[in-house]
Length: 501
Ligand code: SF4
Image (cartoon, rainbow, N blue to C red):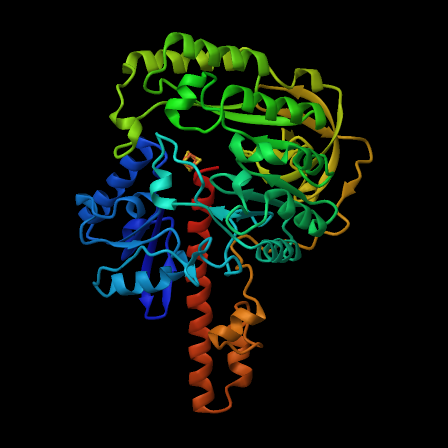
């Protein structure tokens, strides 16, 4: 990700996303999951330096290895410090190099990260993405994310529920819960994922939905009964992303994944039985060190048997500094061929053909890439393309399925289509700051009458003296600074939470 900032006024950093070359500073976020993403990050830094831009770096790459040569002398904001982005940007613009890489702690206990109730700008005003914890309890041999994110640190349930409530009040109709491993949620703070989910479903209004993020098999195994009940809830998508990575026990052991094939199958078979129609998405790595042809064939068989409707196939890349990088590698040609073979198997079936003719209730949340349709999802989080009728956006409507493809269905609203949205508020406008609450205004010392929407009017009405005018100007600067800075926080936060999900 690249954001560019223009310093036009001491307290006003203007975001210029469209034209980075006009900016004084580039804020570059990074992902360490795959090699190409890190290469892209390195190239962006080089480009910024060639253009004489000030640079602030964020994300897992500088957090995990801040001493790398190409990061020398550059400002870094750590993955748990994103709420301090304004300070780092201001100091960097003044010519200082600042590095905030510490962990957030309370009485010596590691916290989840930046506060959840910080103001933010949602990429899509209809969707709220909430990271329920950072880090995980595993030590997968190929993973670099763990180096940056560390051990599990969960957010408390009441903070997560408050965030969800606030989002619904602001017109959000879909919440995504994310983390490196949602199944491990709460183990560090004496609670569990099902406990959190039962609390959250209480606050989901009719017409809105909750989507659960990625969970690895080991910890979810303990909660299967409860998870099945929750995934059957009408306001929770019957969808779970469970990365298997390989169907060979010996490869799983080399990967240090902490489960075997029988565990994975137990989770999937149980949920398929108890949650009829559930979508199970998974990930597979092709060509992990030591993977034999026979190991790979076991993975092919698994895909043929389960016909996962959503499958992320990754050719193995050794990440420097990980145990897997020191193992004997499978030749590149073999890795490529296996990736191709598995993709062919994946494309040999069409998971939605049998749904043509069904009536489905779908929640419409965005526009398709080609701008020809609106994108909606049914109860199983399967993608359904619907006609672009603005009255459907953010709403749940009933459609007739008339066509299907590999990754989608197409639906037409049924005759006299009912729109189900009784308890959803009007969403914020695109780009509007969410969560500038009274409490946050007080902390910033902002007058309650002064809102980010009407600064000029408030200034005019209340500035009865020179002193008053100066104070109001200060407050206005605070609002602008808070809104812009925290918008950056939100954008970073969104990227962080998406990276591992
Ligand atoms: S791959 Fe996921 S579960 Fe494994 S160590 Fe990395 S972040 Fe943790």
